[in-house]
Figure (cartoon, rainbow, N blue to C red):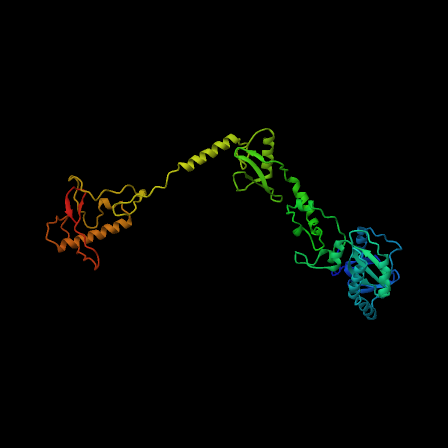
Length: 441
């Protein structure tokens, strides 16, 4: 409502019957004039308006029912004090107005020299010539009251115009000069902000901002107006945050407040002997404060009492956890056999096939195609290893001295496989069979 008419391009029926329009002049100054002749006006059109002792040119900034709301906001009465709009500005009117504006900068420089000659403690900010080139308004800022009667006479004789002196605040001065703020956008006071409200340091405190004058001050040297934009939201959210005026008492020591997140409802505390911050909820802070008022101390900050758990039980649980961590056993290594292979415990203990057993067992040689008893519980990797060793032993027995080998049956023995080139030859191994008789494989 302050800067832009959102209803201009909506394409709705024309129902605006309010005959007063808002006109904007140099420096963001806005005034209201009556459209007596019911001219067809659009936003941005230059118009010639009636001002005291002459006429001036401005641009249409707002019209319709929104103007009525703006007048109510600024407490401007709809009476005969509102002057009229003469006409839409012609090209000749705009050219004459441009000639008057060309005198502003030289006039400002000369006015500053005259002020220095009189030794007045005032700062000249801007000069605005009327469109008919008959009046000049000088804007200045000063901390004390200034007697500028002699100055007005000197300026009127110097520039041959009627002179009006108007004092403005530092915020209004920044709005007239314009500039870019720290947010990267044009200053609010030079674009749309016309009502300057009081800004205090409490607005920064409520928003948890550091009280650094260099960061909180605007180009005018005063506190930024944008500090008031989100103040109501922070004031609403801070109602649920408890006031912590003293440290919270716990068994581990007093805990001091370090930071508060009012939107997440979290508060950070730390102990005197610890630099780590502990975050707890606002409900937990109220519980601890209520216990401290009764003269009780909690074990630590993060114990939840919402389920009825007592501090004594929480302390016992904590001590048990510390004991478990201290006396916990190391991870056991998986057992391995003599060859360095891990034993799969899920398949039961490995049979002792390396050492000979008493000779009361069955025949040590199994029939071809049958599985030996000690090979039934072996893993595939171990069976492959055993089969390779058996083939190597048979090849070595054929190449060495002839030995008498008992025949398990009358079937024809399998051909002996020769060891591959590069393989290591092992001597024949004596194995214990289930019958207790020893034999060479």
